[in-house]
Length: 191
Image 1: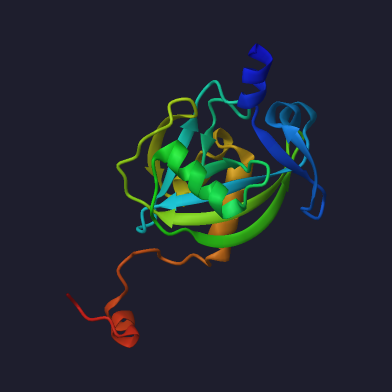
Image 2: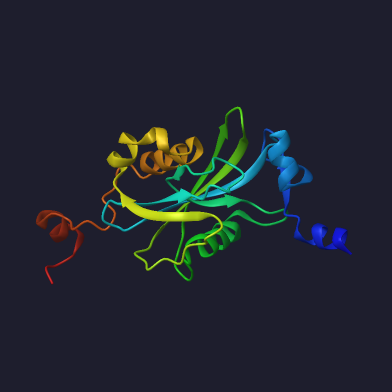
């Protein structure tokens, strides 16, 4: 009976090859222990005014415990598509639900501890947030410059995801008021 309960609690993940094709399934524990290539989601949560929601991982996490994350997200479960995974992770970790997610493509990240095909997303959310106490110790708002100044405190994969998001979005001013001449040319008027 105890073995059945343990098997039911096992989180299964798809193991992928260099081309991001599923080649096997593994328990999350085995994937971490053997450094198997897998999929994960990365969600840049921003306020639309230039600040990024960052989180401190709990000391019990199996990957970079106690470190800061520049993104929300996590490991994609076996058979799960990446958008559903991103929505699930945002709701579990931060209580974010029912808001649109922008998709920003895939990227590959590899270091000694992990090999990941990442799916990059973003969303605008201003809280309040409901933190998953098993995974998120605290959250705060930082600018990209503040994150860069403290980069040695952040997980390397989340920094890569944030950097790609900033690059792929070409430094757009998310939600910042447009200068008067830009509003006029875009058809926006003063309120």
